Image (cartoon, rainbow, N blue to C red; front, side, top):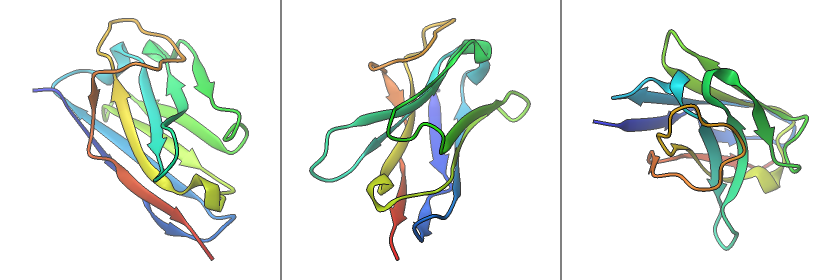
Length: 124
């Protein structure tokens, strides 16, 4: 059974850091492109980062470039999103997702599987 589980969110002050984790079960993350997207109330969904199959390439939205870093740990079957210099506008529910198409590259805007999300709140 394909499952993605996000964790690592929380409340942080502006300028702070968080590291989000995306743990997969039922498939090997390394073979697929993995997307982190976020959804805030009243705002459109935003794909903030993506890592291609076997780390072929990465993608960052302009709003997070230089502040967020995506990485993959193949041994643990996880993908991480390191978020630094956080801003209040980064507050959202963050999801990891995949379309389960072998050998995928980034960016990706359509996907079929995602987890329950992890909440990130940036506030003084």
